[in-house]
Image (cartoon, rainbow, N blue to C red; front, side, top):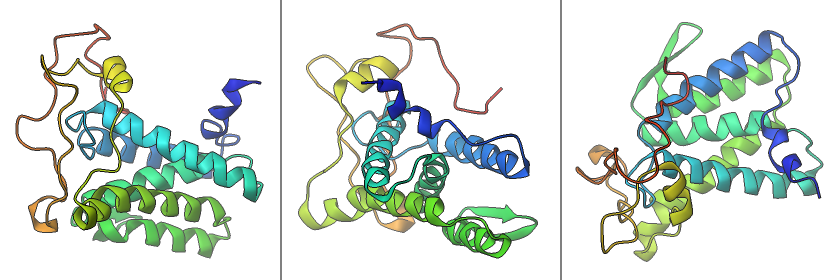
Length: 209
C-alpha cells in the first residue's frame, strides 16, 4: 500500500497557469490567516489545532472522493480552510478583484466567480461542505449537547507544540461563544508557551517571511 497517495492528491494543483497562481494565493493567504488563530480544540488555539483540522478534513475528503470518483481534491482543501476562516472571522473586510465585502460572503463570491468563468464547481463545493461540517462540530454541536466533539490528540500536540502543564493532558477546548464575543476564541492565557518540550524551532505560519 503506497501511503503517500493519501497526501499527494492534496499537494498537486496542476501545471503553472493563472488559475494555479490564484490557488496558491488563496492557499497561502488564508492558511496563514487561520493558522495564527485557529479554533481551540485542545491545544490552546495553536498550530496543532490547525494541523488536526487539516487531517480531519483531508480524511473526510478522501472518503467522499473515493465514492464520487474525484482524483485530486486539492482545491477542495483550499476552500475548506478559507470557509472555516471566514466563519471564525465573519465580519473581517476582504476584497475580491477590488470589490469589498465581509469575510462570511467570500466563499460564495468565489463560488459564483468560478461559475461565471466556467471552472468546475465540484471541488469548491466539496471544500465548503467539509468546512461547514467542521464549523458545525466546533460551534453548533457543543452548544446543543454541552460537550466537545473534536479534540486535538496529544501526539499531534507533542509533535507541533510544547507538552501540556504538569498534571494535565491538554488545555481544554474553548467553548463556543456568542458571535459578538469572538466565536470560540481561545481564552486568555490558554495557548501553549514556547520554549519547552520538543525543540522543533520557533516556526512561522505559512507565507510569513
